[in-house]
Image (tube, rainbow, N blue to C red; front, side, top):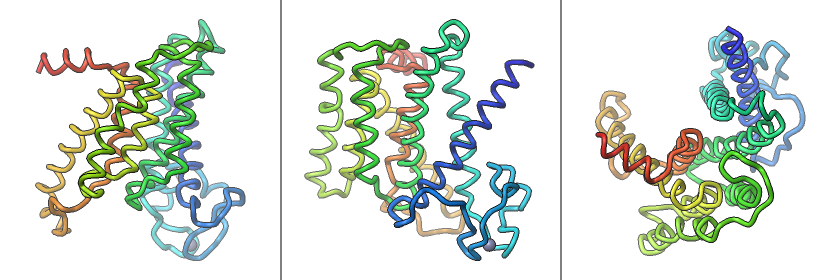
Length: 274
Ligand SMILES: [Zn+2]
């Protein structure tokens, strides 16, 4: 009971951060600053407190603006819910430290919450615009790079990272940069390769490679499902040529590996057991 309550509170905290991430995603590169109350994009009415409750407001208002009844994007509740669940999984991942070493727990939770939040923003932005913005990609790489000097496993202390860990940020994106170059950007965006720099610094060689492999598997599965079910959705425009943004899958692979403590050996064991 007590544990459930904590998880619910963490989910609510994550959903609130998620609603902030929505604001970042929508205002990024739009020339609007991050301050100021949110308003309806159609009628410009400033949102009241009851309209700012993550997920809840969307459900209560039936996905419509309470003033002009125009549709509110599904992006809002989806990003809020995803961030809520990500924070819950992050809490579960480090919960064994929460009472024994609260400072360490808070440090690890805060670091990965920031990293995963950036990945959520990148994913949604890529999904909407088919672009991974350089600024955000390098912010992710920079934080991962700094983290490499302070975080080993589940511990925080300054140390020099191993050579393979540093090289992971160069080795992992290398083949995809070459692929990008020779396909002239058709098979792979350069943004995806740049994102792998941060993935390498964050996870190291073994886990980083696992994240990319998982991203390709889930991406391929999603691609097949899209082709099979597209006619049913009557969209009809989705073919093999429809570019599926790969950033969200890389982010998902990274989150799965990070939260599930997966590396190449566990991946091989998993495949062997199938
Ligand atoms: Zn409105």
